[in-house]
Image 1 (tube, rainbow, N blue to C red):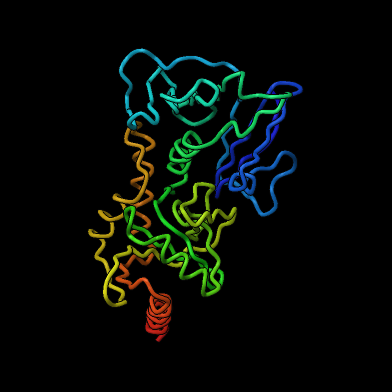
Image 2: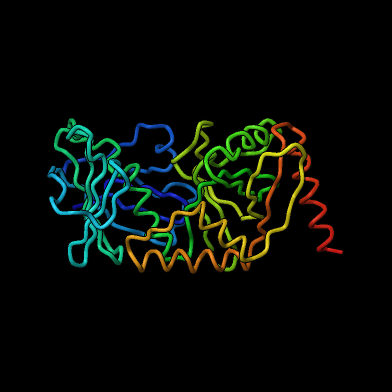
Length: 303
């Protein structure tokens, strides 16, 4: 097997390995920004890497009851030191995905249908949801987490807007974008520490706004969104912030070591990063109120 390409998402690198004469390609616009088939993508600097062996070997999922099932979308089984994932359980064979991942995340074998390869090219072999699931485990190793959140960048600093579906992440992202802010993602974001600094990165898993930037920036703060009749910021106590983060973060409960690493990272995040609730109107005034509140907060700290 040889490395045919690299998928770099935030601080994570998936080194995609194939057999001789086989190539890997990502045509989907969101993924193409995170993929490189030669030298490392400019600006990428992974904190952790997982080799992924791409093999053309279809097969049904185990007949026994899984360890964890996400509806009809995907499921995971235990097999000794490995976890076996199957995605697209009710999909046609040519789009069915499966992988065997070491619990310690040292390696994984990605199994795709022979029909998914044409002319020696594997099109987008590692993709949603398997890439996202493996990211949960890798992030847990470095004290990070994947959040259901949008990321807007102002002055080189990333502000994370989070909440359940319908909270207003895409709406606020669009408002910030209209004001000239850079949007890294409007649905999924990675938070993690690089050295002594918390960072936030975009991912390929975008929302309705289709924002998916392959970049990371310093993390300035996290804001839980709540639509309201007026715009205001509300401080959150540590205990409330922890519970709220659990509601919007991907915790891989099916594997104890992965889950514990994620929980430890979230606990540190609460201690070290500003977390507040943002009651906002769905108008441009919300962006101005957010900036004013942040600037006031910083000036108060400096004073």
